[in-house]
Amino acid sequence: MAALVKLFYLLAAVLFIFGLKRLSSPATARSGNWLASVGMLIAIVVTLLFQGILTWQMIIVGMIIGSLIGATFARMVKMTAMPQMVALLNGFGGGASAVVASAEYARFLDAGSAIPLNTGITIQLSVLVGSLTFSGSVIAFAKLQELVTGRAVTYPLQKTLNAILLAVIVGLVVWLVVTPQNPTAYVVLAGLAFLLGMLSVIPIGGADMPVVISLLNSYSGIAAALTGFVISNEGLIISGALVGASGLILTNIMCRAMNRSLANVLFGAFGATVAEIGPAGAPGGKSVRSITHEDAATMMAYARQVVFAPGYGLAVAQAQHEVRELADLLQDRGVEVKYAIHPVAGRMPGHMNVLLAEADVPYDQLFDMDHINPEFDRTDVSVVIGANDVVNPAARHDRSSPLYGMPILDVDKSHHTIVMKRSMRPGFAGVDNELFYDEKTSMLFGDARDSFKKLITEVQEV
Image (cartoon, rainbow, N blue to C red; front, side):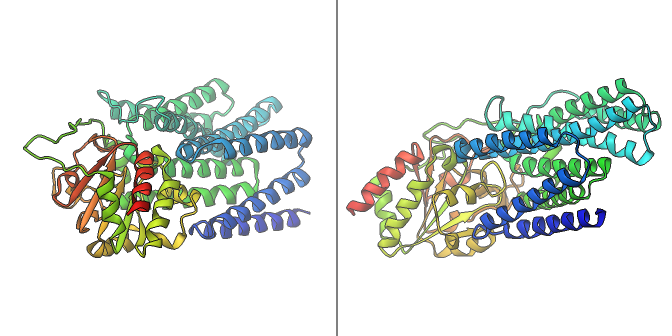
């Protein structure tokens, strides 16, 4: 029977791996999600049937309730709120791991039996990583939901205090491994880990949220794998390890996309200050040129190639369907339309891909940064929709800019650039954008959704 259980867990693991593989492309993501879901269902059923669960009826009730809540969220949560949703899901995963590890710890205490060394180590690490993940994810959710400021929050001796807190936590872990029968110390450990998670995410600004979300996702997987060792469940170990590894890989990809180290993201307080720029221009005599909807529509309607570069402003305006409608009109006129996707555009990894997929934008029109940048030299019109830092030319040459070295979308190399924004307010990095003052750039101010509706009308009349 034990061999059969491990065989089923292996089958679930294979489905997880193939599911992750298919998630790498928008065209196969849905089937990949189904494969991974089937793998998880197999793992759950096997655990319920063969792992000596005494109250499996309550677990099934919990599964039904959880599934209903999840289905409700999936139907009701808007695409603009998907980063917040992902942050919460990461937190739930970490929190669940901490709860399971704590339940196992309580079981040992109630039985009065000694806790094996290896189990004691994994219990303490599981509650540490799980609690940290939960609280950090809650803060990430609050920042994304704008319940607290999305800017980096700093205070004196912040890093020193966090280092001291981490040292105390490590000391508690060692103490509990040596003398595990100490519930008070265990509760203190969980509380301090919870506090560390909050204090670790507070000084991280909105520009770095894609990295934070992918890192917290990795943490949730690591916590699950540790809990798998606690309860000797191979399925949980495998699935947690896969999530942990894939999250770390994605975190590395996000960091490379910004040309910054993970340490700089976590401790650099990027975007702590913001410089408000007036609507007419900026210090130093720089000025911007506005464009009317009629002129913008005419420019696009008679272009050979138009490239849309979406950013978080597109998500805020919920204008993805209008973008698709305008793109269809342009293609009917013989204009070649493409979408430029920067890896860290938006608030979570793949945010723009998910947003445009909701509007059924064809996958073959989505191009990542490396593939679209050579196209800008022959692009007649680039339309920047609410993106800011990821199109700032200062990243190439201004060594004093916090963006210096960050790979960007080369929209400024287009023949003409139209920037759609509500105002001249800088992006999450808090720095002015040179693109706005380029002689080839025209600003189209206003809500993106309303602007696209007007552009659609104007293109129809051209």
